[in-house]
Image (tube, rainbow, N blue to C red; front, top):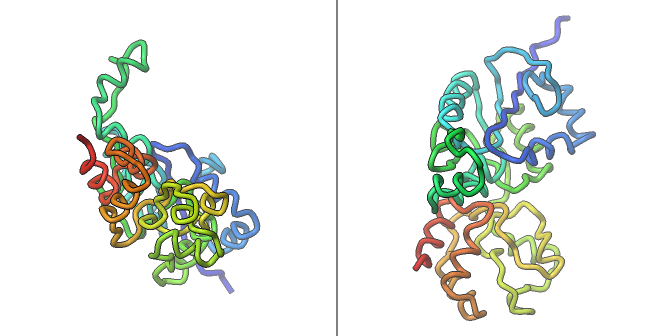
Length: 259
């Protein structure tokens, strides 16, 4: 009996550090099981062998930072039945979105000896700002467990199940002492999407917001609490401008303190 066609998976890179693609490779045993159910048609981080589209599922890492990126993502969208963005760069513009608050020409003049050779957009933006995205997987880098869940869900024809709550819930589950209450340490946990397992608070460090804003984050309330811990407007602006600086909730809250 002839075996049914396996779904085609493609993994694409835009402006990024490759960390989220490495998370897929780090899945090891789970990846081998998934690979038995799909055909990895395009994944240059793992192999130079490629198969032409169309693709059943495309995973996209990285942000759009050049005109070439903007054109390429349109073509990838056309070739993909489902498109999932993975990581802070793809879902919010990444750390490179700090350019959105500055003058890119000034940056390039400082960094490069011949800035006239640099062809880049003035902004770094999420994939979803350019094409329809079927699902966003947050994180810097993403959770391997959540990534396997997303791939499995699309293979099964169901919606991926990822937690909508904050890192604070993960701290409660782990039995961590709240670093803000117990030590007066600034922490973005109350407004940050869960997924990391509350790694930083587990070691008495404040959350850095790697997974971006949770659903309906109350950032003004958190900022009021952080102010009581001694953070001024400049510190508040900076704490929201890291891995997910251009995520809507974090961007708006940082701009509120940009004086």
